[in-house]
Length: 527
View 1 (cartoon, one colour):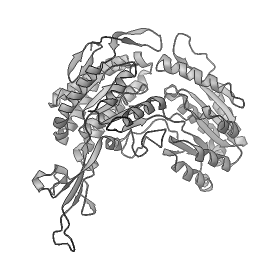
View 2 (view 1 turned 135 degrees about the vertical axis):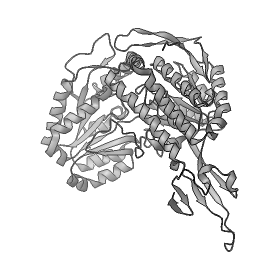
View 3 (view 1 turned 45 degrees about the vertical axis):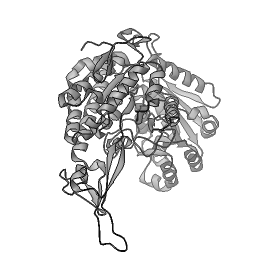
View 4 (view 1 turned 180 degrees about the horizontal axis):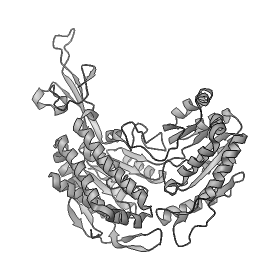
């Protein structure tokens, strides 16, 4: 595929103009062609008006048609072949093996949501039949089902160019629900975005849905994103990125005459609590898995385990010694782009100025000066230093982490209770540890979206049970997830029908229930 640098506006290709920008290969700093441009306000308006015009066609299409669309997107991604991987590798510096796996995840997500909407139970249909002779008042016929919101704006993430990008979970579940999508592509990998955007347009054409169901706009600055969120046609926003970026979009959306939800996933420090029984049994194995998690993807995951807490003991010292030794063997790796690399270096430089925070181990090999590389860095400290320096509890995106010594359980509990909202927390322990440290689990239940036992938070399983979110500031709405099938509920709302004749009801509310979807009928869950 020849890249053009064009925006895709409801099937119309718009050449770049005005302020132009390029992607850069983070491994070599080489500029990549073609040039891309910042979309204009007029182009944003055109994309959203086309989305509004296509909304009825998409929302009234049968679930089978929308599922066929998702299957067609999966096929189009596959058809891009190695060219997609090669462009993403050039723009993001991610290893080919990682990109191959992520492409599989993106294809799998499409097929997962296709299956979800074909069956129909996700729509939470509820039927309460009329009881006309009920005393003292008759009961009306009341039925409720989830319906799509309308046009959705999606901001692609930098660290998952496939799975949380142009055809990531946000886009896929919005289309599955019946919502047209306008994607603001990430400026660090615009060529990858263009290839995936064309795949979506090809899929729409295959299944006969309007091209207005999808648009892709490029832009390096904040202006186009703000314009899309402010636009009165936009009904919801999906965002994965920094707290600063997510909060800015939330504020813009809240200031609209008609506020809309921004479903922002904004990262966290993902604390890990290593309990005595686990340290006694397998300190070395936990250290090995910990370093693997910290350095996975060069630490560029919102689930990176940035803070570890353990009770003062010989076992904790062994854990620290093992982790430091393993960190030294990790070679520096290329980060997604120079901006992220510079932020990582600046963040860890600040850490090194804090009294009581010690560098326990780092990559023996120095990062290459010509590449955006990061060395693994493991620090140690005590709980009083951790609690006394707020900057240590802010996310530094990259392969770094702090191991913290606590005198007793009360210190762990105090820290857990003081946490801001987190995406995850992890406990390493034994069954006896869980009994003894039960108050710690109870404290974490109030602070995080996902609690992991004897594992690590990186490597998220995409499945119906997954919850990837948490209390603010980890995410904007703790009830909602940005990964897994439940993510579809961000872009729908319940509509209730009272007294309607059977033939005028949506299919999922009809007594015949032709899809055999699970529903609540007169208070009973059944098909």
